[in-house]
Amino acid sequence: MGDDISLAALISLLAILLVLSAFFSGSETALMSLNRYKLRHKARAGHRGAKLAENLLQRPDRLIGLILLGNNAVNISASALVGVVSVQIGGELGFAIGTALLTLVVLIFAETAPKTMAALHPERVAFPAAYIYFVLLKILYPLVWLTNVMANGVLYLFGLRNTDTDGYALSREELRTVVYEAGARISGKYQQMLLSILDLEKVSVDDVMVPHNEIIGIDLDDDIEEISALIRNSQHTRLPVFRDNIDNVLGILHLRKLANIFTQLKFTKDDLEGLLEEPYFVPEGTPLSMQLLQFQKGRRRFALVVDEYGDIQGIVTLEDILEEIVGEFTTDPAADEEEIVRESESSWLVNGTINIRELNRIMDWDLPTEGPKTFNGLIVEFLETIPESGTCLAINGYPIEIIETRENRVQLARIHVTENKATVSES
Image 1 (cartoon, rainbow, N blue to C red):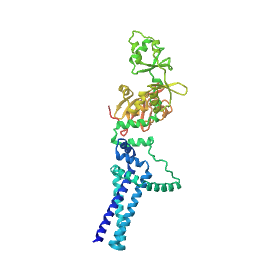
Image 2: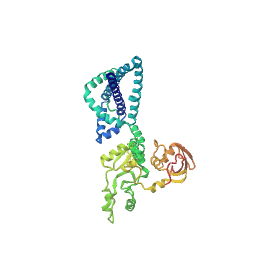
Image 3: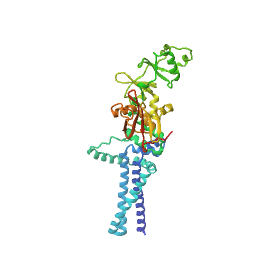
Image 4: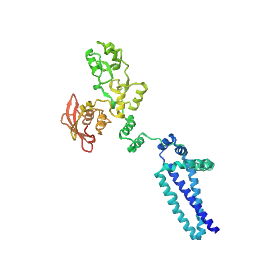
């Protein structure tokens, strides 16, 4: 009777050891499978289990040492216990069978099953386990510390150093992958905005500026009536003021400052000059990310882009940079319609002056943006000559037909879009 009770107690103890083994195996996988950014978010939101788990993972060597210490102690104890039980039941043959059965049970119920469950639901396993490990680490710290010292000593002999405890900083491309994989958790619009922010450093002011020949400004050599009409019809709040041509810029006029004098029956050019702000110049090639910070730092919204010789190449505004992130939101839709006209189900008429990045964004096309900034420039660079009307070519798989050439540039071209590229529906 005493042997039966003893045997039952041993089997019960063996079951407890197997449960502990499953706990150590599963919790190890769960803690190591946690998404570190979701974990940090939950910890900052006040989740107690997440805080403990984050604290434990700050020193993974200690955590792994604690888990392996417990897991090995439990498995070795279970192995010894199986030996005792097996011998009592079946002698030497029972010992061999018991060892084989223990291996199978540990593999299935204490390793594979708990680790699989933990990998599928890491937070459900890791957060409760963090409470237990936090207490165990306090109790067993001297033993864990001694184990880690010896383990790190072995690693040191092989030239490995435990100096990088936080290797989870993401590169820009890795962040892009994270945004892409967010899927339905982030709407398509916000996903595109996040990707645009990550791309700001790749885009320069040259890509978004209004080019030199399209700058609208006030020429003080014009009659005051012409200047007055230009101001009344202006769609911009800031205009460069110059004499003869834009390269002789005198300053920037904020139309809001005209509110007082514009109500007068007459105002003079001297009145305008007295309202001018100092022009702000930026070098061509400046990344948009840097220019955005410069606008913010200087509390500016308008800049003149100059080349290495100081000649003005164009104008860039804060609005232009913001539109690179959120898309166009203040541009007159009629302007886009004049530059891009749908001719048929598979063809579009495109003005040669349109910016390629703007064209790609509006039409969801993939024309190259590394070289020339305008559609005309792209065609001329590809052909290495100014084409005549009727010339046909293909760029990046887009068949293009030149419709009109005027003043040494492509004025109008037709783009034929195949079904797999015609992703923009008719508005």
